[in-house]
Length: 186
Ligand SMILES: [Mg+2]
Ligand SMILES: [Zn+2]
Image 1 (tube, rainbow, N blue to C red):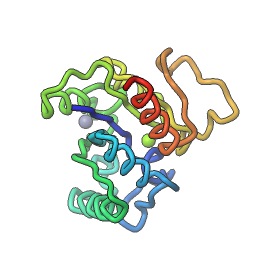
Image 2 (spheres, rainbow, N blue to C red):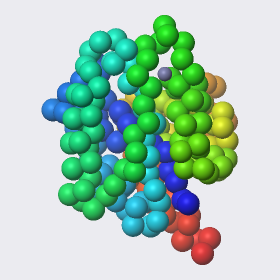
Image 3 (cartoon, rainbow, N blue to C red):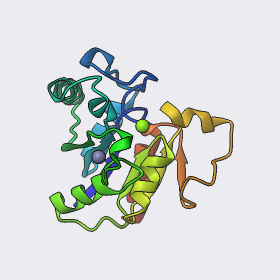
């Protein structure tokens, strides 16, 4: 099974300093939904691993989060794309859970659910937290320069990032990269 693990806010949809708290605030990044569709058509399953501390902070509830994801699935379906599942951490930082990235718990859940070996599975995110969490279980780290990643358009990556981090302008650019790499192998 070909699997890609995506961060959500800042990678697939616009991030907000005050958290994405409602379906109206869930706004896809340009070309991001189409990028998922292109990956799907090339045989990749896509799942999301997302910190949603807004739940633990009481900013929104699970039914609102489900409504955001219903919007996401609907917008994806309209362009022929699909996210298989959303894995999220509902905790606030002070709960010190094992699933809030940069901890690897969400990735371990994904590995168990799909019964796959995580080493080599591409992980895509806009922060070091996403990539450290994935790299801890052997995933291949890819940074997108959208969301919080936009800060690195003009700056070197700090040491907090995994050494093997590959950088792409956007999720669309990452999809093009992955599909071209696969095609070159064939
Ligand atoms: Mg993010
Ligand atoms: Zn958690």
